[in-house]
Amino acid sequence: MIFLGHSSRANQFIRSIKGKNKMIFLMKKSNHVITCTPYLDSYVRKYNNSTTDISSTINTDVYKPINNYNNSDSIVIGWSGSHSTSKYLYILKQILIDLQAKHNFKLLVIGDPSFCIEDLDLEAISWSKETEVS
Image 1 (spheres, rainbow, N blue to C red):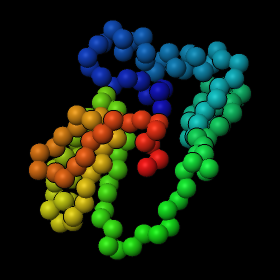
Image 2 (cartoon, rainbow, N blue to C red; image 1 turned 90 degrees about the horizontal axis):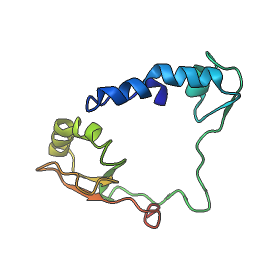
Image 3 (spheres, rainbow, N blue to C red; image 1 turned 120 degrees about the vertical axis):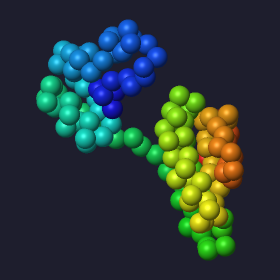
Image 4 (spheres, helix red, strand yellow; image 1 turned 45 degrees about the horizontal axis):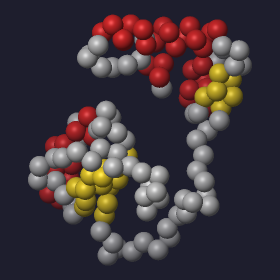
């Protein structure tokens, strides 16, 4: 949802260049806008009626559902992002610690190998195309 603008306070000058008004300007001036969710498509149509919603897809030859779960499997809560977005996961620090005090689980962080919360059972690894599915 790039039209919401950049929330970083690190560089106010860049914020003015990348702000919401630029996105609205580009939407109005575009011949056609491609979106990836019905919500975004609805938003863009306020400024440009020529849109196509191409929802994200999953290659079902590569990504296959696992249907053999049982109650003895350990619980893994997964998160995928990057170093720049893991700050949003840190917001849940106390919630995750409290939850782990009540329930045994492991947090798997993919994309920020330096992610760490003391006293939380977690594994932080880099993302790679070769290991994404597994």
